Image 1: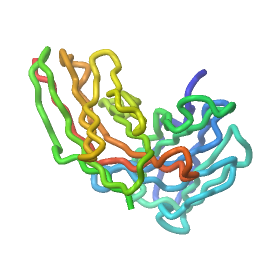
Image 2: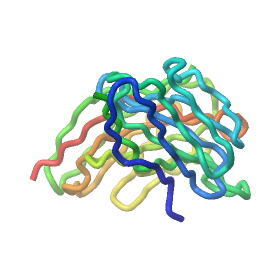
Image 3: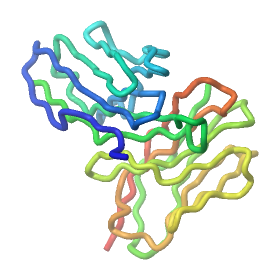
Amino acid sequence: DAGVIQSPRHEVTEMGQEVTLRCKPISGHNSLFWYRQTMMRGLELLIYFNNNVPIDDSGMPEDRFSAKMPNASFSTLKIQPSEPRDSAVYFCASSGTPLGGRDRETQYFGPGTRLLVL
Amino acid sequence: AQTVTQSQPEMSVQEAETVTLSCTYDTSESDYYLFWYKQPPSRQMILVIRQEAYKQQNATENRFSVNFQKAAKSFSLKISDSQLGDAAMYFCAYRRGPMNRDDKIIFGKGTRLHILP
């Protein structure tokens, strides 16, 4: 398996622009998580989905942030409009085992997207 | 609410020596999972080791082992024969047990480990 795939790996944009981050979870995993990591705030859970349904979005900072999971193999995190304080590394992670086997609880992380908003 | 505490923001160890990273957690549940993740300078989050609370035997993965003390709610990570590639931020994490449908993992704030050549 290729693991969790995120794109782009790096994004530089100007304040006010729309930013879309993409994630492909590990095949067969049914839970997907979006995290943000900064020096000041550490690792924060933004939102997570189970079976494509948003379960907990209490970590989404404000209305400028939105996340979707249209199918089991794809999710997006959108920031519109972006602001300099959104600069961070954004991680996607997935967990679950299709047949309910071992290790369904472990989250596996993608490589992250480094976002810089100027 | 569950919490995870890593009391050592930074640690250093001489190459080839052994180092132990501390982690304590707070929970009222009896069944849960504990993890250690490693984040090297590349920023990739890598699973190092996991422990199921109902198992008394401490988990091991090559040079990495844990000391799981359930009554004390302690979950320390021991790295033997430290190597330069072990230099990273290490996160301790907690997840509620299989009977709980909450998939969230609670992370500690991390311990930055430096390896001295």
